[in-house]
Structure formats: C-alpha cells, structure tokens
Length: 263
Ligand code: CAA
View 1: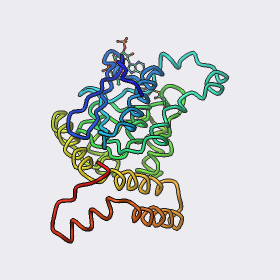
View 2: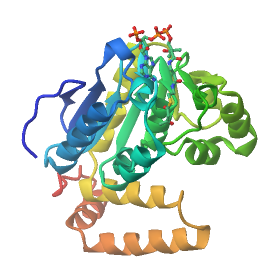
View 3: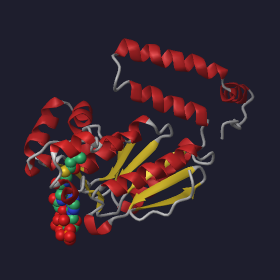
View 4: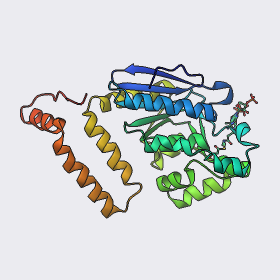
C-alpha cells in the first residue's frame, strides 16, 4: 500500500501507534460518495498493514461525522446499476477486512450511512449533542449499509423500528443511554482527546491479543452464544502459541512491565 494523497479524507499519526482518519468533505457535510469511500478503504487498509499502527481513530468535523450516502450521486441510480455494481457493498470491507480496532469519534451529524459507518466501528464515542439517525424513509428508501440490522441489535427492535420508520434523529446523550456509544464528551476537542487516550491505551497492548479480542467480540454479533463461546475458546487456546502471552504472564509474575514482541 503506497503512500497516497487523498482528496476527501486526511490521515495522520497523532500518537505513537495510532492512525487517525478524518473525513474531510466539508461542503457536503462529509457525505459518503463512492470516491470518499474508496479513499477511506485505502487508508484503512494502509493503517491495517502498517507495522507501526495498532489502533485507528475515525472522525469527521465538529459539524458532521457524515451526513449519509451521497444523495446526489444516488438519485438517478437504477436498480440494475445498483445491483450489478454491488452499490454500498464495499463499505462493509471495514467490518470484514480490517483487523485492528477502529474507534469512531462522532460529532455533529451521523445520519443514514454516517450512522451506519459509526455503527460498523469497534468503539463509538460521541459528543452529547451528536445527531444520529436513519432518515432514509424521508427519501423514499431504507438504510442500505446495515443500519436496520446493526442499530436494531444495538438498541432493540422497539426503538430501532420507531427511528427507522419515522426517520427521527437521536442525540449523542441518547446514544450513550441506549448503549450505542461507550462514552460521551461535552465538546469536540474533549471527544478527540478522549478517543486518542483510548486509542493509545489499546496501542500499548499486545497487538496479537488486541486483534484477537476485536475478532472474538465481533463474533458475538454473528454467532449464537454456544458457537460464540466455542469460537472464543479456540482463539484463546491459540494465543498460548503467541510470544506475547508468555511475556505478559512472566512480566506479571516478576512484577515488571511487559515489553511486547508484537509491538
Ligand atoms: N448527500 C449529498 N449532499 C449532502 C448530503 C448528503 N447526504 N447531506 C448534506 N449535503 C449537502 C447539501 O446538499 C448542501 O450542499 P449545497 O450547499 O451544495 O446545497 C451541503 O451539504 C450542506 O447541507 P445543508 O445546507 O442541508 O446543511 P444544514 O445544516 O441545513 O442541514 C442536514 C444539515 C440536516 C444534515 C441536511 O444536510 C440533511 O438532511 N442531509 C441529508 C441527510 C440524509 O438524508 N442522509 C441519509 C442519506 S441516504 C443514505 O445514507 C443511504 C444509506 O443507508 C447508505
């Protein structure tokens, strides 16, 4: 993955081990056009492959995480074009091919595909006033990037059905109360700082253990409990084959700080 300059996103490495992707299409409130998603996927793959990066932060601006799929791009799309080109399918590569944890830091609008993108991430932090929603019904359509499934799993059928059928928004405060967001912050700056602190904590852990932990927690969303517990045990057993497990447990016994091999 070569170094690439981007038009619709910015990438930085703000802390040791942390890669940050900032959606940067301000004139369209970070609407998720196909070129933007292509850049996002490229940047995510680059960070995922980088030996230095151990955690990824995905954010937007204070005003908008992302206001959804690009309505102007979609408005004239035909069924045949959408179906044959698997429209929106490439968005999900975030959930299928990225092994390092992704923290979404959401401020402002996270609507439609923006809400869905945030829900695909591994940890969601937001400001109290963030504006989440699945307003597709107002456009004569429905969520197309997993919102009807992930939001329903996250907040239950009753609330999800009401939100998706009416297109009503919910706040960052509600996202926290309903278990969508792990934490909320009063301001954008505090959101970014809090997200970086968490990303740095993750980056300080064993890389192989972090990737395994992400994998097994995400399996809980797809597998029945018995299969999920079995899957976890297999991965847990496999980590006895990692050097970091030996290093971590030896360091505990010797009351030392673990110096991970898989940095
Ligand atoms: N697609 C394309 N352009 C968008 C956009 C979107 N989703 N959201 C905002 N924009 C553009 C506006 O068209 C406007 O551009 P112009 O200046 O060229 O007119 C610019 O961003 C600023 O937007 P507003 O003037 O509307 O800003 P506002 O502050 O008055 O309102 C808003 C903000 C409430 C977020 C409003 O922009 C809005 O309702 N946006 C659409 C939200 C939406 O419906 N999202 C769902 C999209 S469908 C989807 O995502 C499908 C899926 O599941 C994958």
